[in-house]
View (cartoon, rainbow, N blue to C red):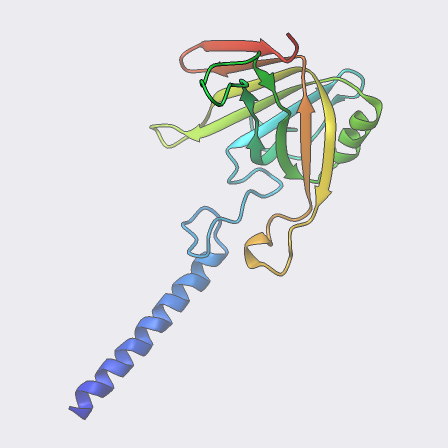
Length: 203
């Protein structure tokens, strides 16, 4: 009986040790099924599936630091938020007015382009902003499949922040910047199907 109990204790210890070893081995391997959770893209854009191109009317291309082939000078995007809504009557569910565009908000890392984005905000410089969406295709390759294009875009708000560094999951995020764009026109484009639609902010 004592021997069986000892075997069970040793087996339990070995199991815990194996799990701990797996966590350590995968913690520093982005995109490898990290048991500690996804840690976000690096400055080079590794692991990110959305990128932003910005070209100002005065400053030209605003480089975001990405050097990957086909995505040079873009900004690796960590999050995207955009809303278009139609006001409705709460009693009938019917519209009470025209649709309303809200700012297109993206989060990226601080880069050499950040001072230029700040200047765009303070001077009101217009820009063309293209948000590129990428995914893994059937052949296992990354490909661009969707775009959102903002014409006559303005940086209406820019907020810099640093996530809490004592949280392990935040380690790779570094110094972040959240940028809110207004625009004159937005175009949505699905590349494979060729479907494209657009709308204006003003009406």
